[in-house]
Image (cartoon, rainbow, N blue to C red):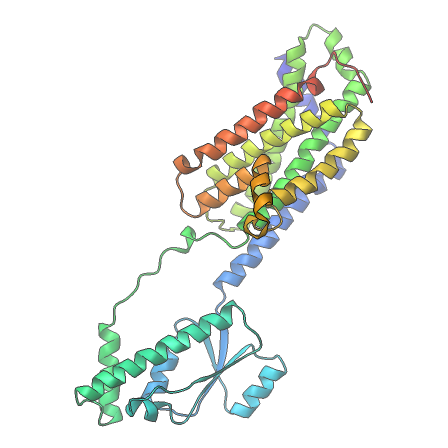
Length: 380
């Protein structure tokens, strides 16, 4: 009961600090929501391709019909005007189907389709590959129809195309929920940075209580030392859990952002990281018992470990030796587990990640247990 009252009072003090609300709840929620929303819009939007069909044959129409399933096609009346729009950056991609497109196919030749683009990016590569695939497909179909004697007119060619499309195998597209969102790791990494700051702020309040002998006065009452320690640490855990719950509620429920992972699994690994982060804070508090020195050292400690753990960029772009060193920070294990679950992995496949995070908690908390001892009054 004493532990409960100490934890409740500690949480109340933290929540009453209105300035910390910006960095604890508002800013992390807005940042995660903005990053994930931008990713969702980018994934759902189809590239827009302007085109001019100078051929007008059944082959060019079939080509445009096929491309229209994957891209948004915009018809232009003049090729020169379309190229001018592309130069003026009013268009990103432009497609010019030449006059001899159908004739070359009927003659058994490979036609050339001109694709104009501002630069090489993911969308332009997708359009180029789709265009080449469809052109090879129509060339093979035209050759097959010519060998069977069914390519003597456009009417027969149209019948052959229609029959081919009806008998073409349909490839089932998997649910997009099994695909990892592009910036899931970055958004969760930045959120973990704020979580670590929140945890360090909680430890700062503990150290201030030790410096001002608040813990000693509590210790003078009929309250055991372990009750005070558990009360403070438990209050910090609950305070951090409130932060996780509010951010996930705003991003997942209110904004409806799909992160490719269940809310329970995501909350569990963020909670495990919270425990490890608070344990790191306790270790730093034992090394730097003065709240002023701790505030300077602690928050400087956040950015390098976040960089090393892959919170700002993928681990794969780092040097090999840095990738090995990153296993010594809890951010790496938490982010890897969340990313693995988002890709369709089971809980059994990430149990080692959960175990390592718990091991971090035990080791760091063991080293930093001095920061929670109310009878230890040492200051820097």
